[in-house]
Amino acid sequence: MILTGSSDENYARTLCTEILSHNEESISWEGKEIPLSLYARAVHYEGGTTLRYSEFFTMLQNELSDEKKHQYN
Image (cartoon, rainbow, N blue to C red; front, top):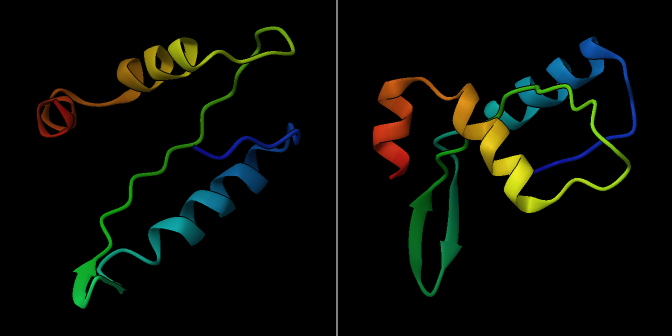
């Protein structure tokens, strides 16, 4: 999860594109090469100043397609 104080939608989309550009790159952990599998989507939050984890995960769940929901359960 990345939160930004920016209200610029293009900035958020650029961040998502940059994050996704690293999919399939490998990281080394405990002597193993693990390919990255990242998910990013720009979501505009119009709530109060504090975003609770439960609110974030509810927003994410609502944004994911049925196929993705199955993959993450």
